[in-house]
Image (cartoon, rainbow, N blue to C red; front, side, top):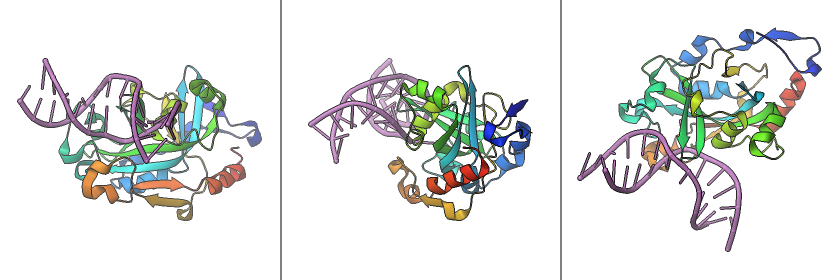
Length: 223
DNA sequence: AACAAGATTAACT
DNA sequence: GTTAATCTTGTTA
């Protein structure tokens, strides 16, 4: 499948498949490392409304059975967590507080229930479609921040649970081509997991400096 | 079968 | 800063 990048790229046209991270990218057992490497990549959704995308700007690592904040803590293998135990490179979507769909990237080999929660995007393509979903115009600096807000903008819901993110189907992740350095990343404790006891303080939340990212986006001609 | 809690958000005071 | 909205899941009985 071919897909034309926006006009500022002139006649540059590239196969999406060349931008899809390979299977090995998701198989890494280091979920913290993947959480950082996902920053600056592009998440894309394809729904009947059209294509929407955003640059991933905030992530959190959930380190499987040994992490008190993880749904799989203690080896809990249930209908809900079963997706986390599959091979990396698929989506884990669940309903939080009965209201919000939260989107995770499952990572690691089968049997290792690691996942990365996507907490923030900088909307890129399909901003008009996103506006329709929230019934007002989009503020790209605010409306993509928050795990529930991100899924609403992208039109992601429980039906996306288990979706393969390694292929361009309904929901996938692409390399953006942006050059992200360690100096653009800050880390801190995860949000909303006070119940996790001693693991609540782990610095497993990662944020991209939006100012620097936008500079990169302009440099790369994505905006 | 019943129940408490939750990886949140928006709209309040 | 506080609170309502809303429902699936995991746990306990």
